Length: 348
Image 1 (cartoon, rainbow, N blue to C red):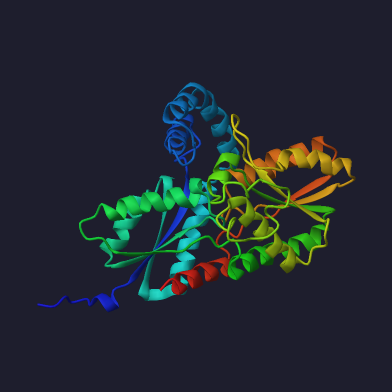
Image 2: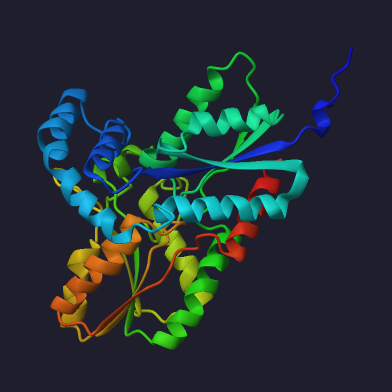
């Protein structure tokens, strides 16, 4: 007896993956989220005993209260901005792709969990899954961890579906154009003296691990000036490639922008230059109106809204700057939703 739904006509499941967020800005929820997030050996990349001590003796006793206060500042009536934007993007992409697809999103840490999202797609008859981690640039701590967890979940099933993954899209024309479409009118209206492209930071040790040559990445000031066979998996090099792509679309002049890195944790050397150390240097050079883009993030979240839009703006004023404009992420904008849909179709 044949199945009533041939495999060729079954829908394709599209899973969009984001990092995660606490259930609420309450301290217990934030502590629970941080414990799951920072217990991941791909995030705190160090010997297990050192990670255990750092997490339980230093981070969890003190950081949840401070982080909860930060989350409280950005929380909306609908919940976490990251969840709100990702849910809206999922709905938008589903509308674009139509009946041949079932689109869901899952969080690497927190809710909705990846396992539930995957099981939900399979329950809808999806015999094939397309996986898109929503991180433009590849890092073991973000895309790598999300994919590793997805493979663990899918591989544990008796019937393993076909799985196709979409790699980093740091130079994808659709992503770059979507970001430029949002930024361009805001920049024209604001007329900044300077622009920062601020990316999430990463420990230098993780950058060096991505280098098969062992001596190219971070070996010189020009190591990220272009992509080559050695640094093609380097997060920092991919960030600079994103900057170059956006600079071209925005028609920015040399010297009018800087690429920096934010969201640092103490205890390790992190890739430079750092956003919070570049800001006062810019005011010392006479910059007063600063615009900040955050192209390592596809959805506005704690790192963009609070770290840049609130703390960054305060630091800028204290350093002598007059105005700081935070450019929103691509979120659920139509150009970005169309770009995601195109990446899903191209994965066939």
